[in-house]
Length: 389
Image (tube, rainbow, N blue to C red; front, side, top):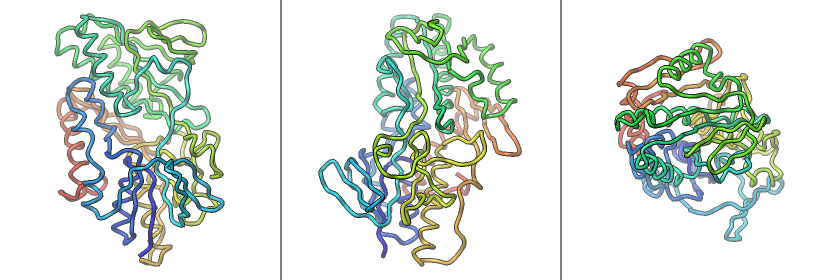
């Protein structure tokens, strides 16, 4: 039985561990966290719709269920020249078959410590909850939510969760009867944030912003963050009692300091089969990898899962476990999400042929809740996986 080591216990790493086991590999998953954090449903923690335990579940239970080994450890260095991985414990291993699924770092901004992110460390979701509760107790305030871009790799933008939490907070404050006491503004450095969703989606988002009395500050680069403000390149200021900001993805220092092939942002260059360029038997999937494809491409969880499954399938062919043709990830590139708003949702889809945003009042919110439970139960193998989900 061939052995594969998977670095990363997020959505991509978990999918890789499950499917490499299905393909007959002996699997070790190495993660710096002991739990899986389901980022797409973390938007509900700050508004008390979900608890932290609803969004996280233990990796050891998943490992036991699927028969792979779990090691909780942090990686210190990776060298493709001699195929070694060094851990913070000091151990160095030669690894012939490796899957890198460690995610991405964040672009650096002056004063970022004055912000919190729904896509950052899982604990920040709880800090956001505390800050929101403090503002509710105060009776009002100014709230600024936003996200940034990375000119070296635009595919790492994470705008969707920012919009989702923004709408959920609006709904939460309305239920409390104090929405009129809050000034809510969304900001982004690009002129049309969300443009990758398509023109129809942009028009619908604009209508929703006007209907819900949201402010918007678009098209100005961020100069710095302060304790009570966002300062833009022209020195204009957006005053804020709470700033939630999602920096764009950037290559991790672990990768940037390695000899792995990288693009300008520090993401790992791969071929269409997810194999790292020039490194036989090593793969990169999910946010750690540099995507190729259409201009509107975006790194999303379902794309990370496709890449993980393809890596397992292609590795099994190379290992002689089965015949068949290798699978490519670029054939599956699309944007797909249910953008939750607390009392409904919008179904977003984009590929080369069409771009959709379909409003789904009430039922859309419950569909996203269903997906959260489906993710846990299907990953644990308690219910069958629905094709395409």
